Amino acid sequence: MLYEGVLLFGVVMLVGLVYGLLTNQRHAMEGTVGLKVSLFCALGLYFVYFWSRQGQTLAMKTWHVRLVDRDNGPPALWRATLRYLFAWMWFLPSLAALKVAGWSSGGAVATVLVTGALAYAWLARVHSDRQFLHDVLCGTRLLDARPAPGAASPR
Image 1 (cartoon, rainbow, N blue to C red):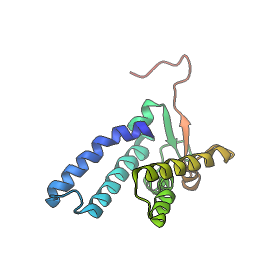
Image 2: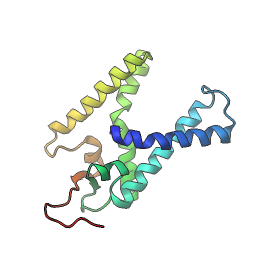
Image 3: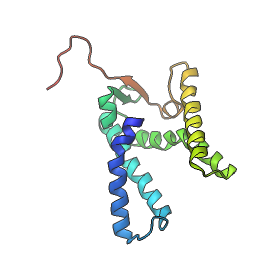
């Protein structure tokens, strides 16, 4: 997830730049709702495109992880979209808790988000197939995509 975040930094910066230019944004606190919606859509396009096309984002290729559906192929467009939406369960409960509690300090936000993500990851440990909840709900799963030992590497 961290490596994916590093790669997405450029995407987020580009979307922010384009949004700021198109809306003539002059202050960081103006148009934040539109920017959030734009970023949500841009990230969705990134993930859905790569997942439905080849089952791997750029970071997933590096770590030899592949997303497949029940037939062991790349997920259909609708399934990849559903997975993107359900994957927000990594963060939404924590963000809702922060909103309800009224906490906004950096330490509180970081602590609650990390605790929530660890709790969500723990759910995969208790699942019989070691799957994340969003994969179970979407009918997808992550596979080890390392080449078999002794297999010729593609050129």
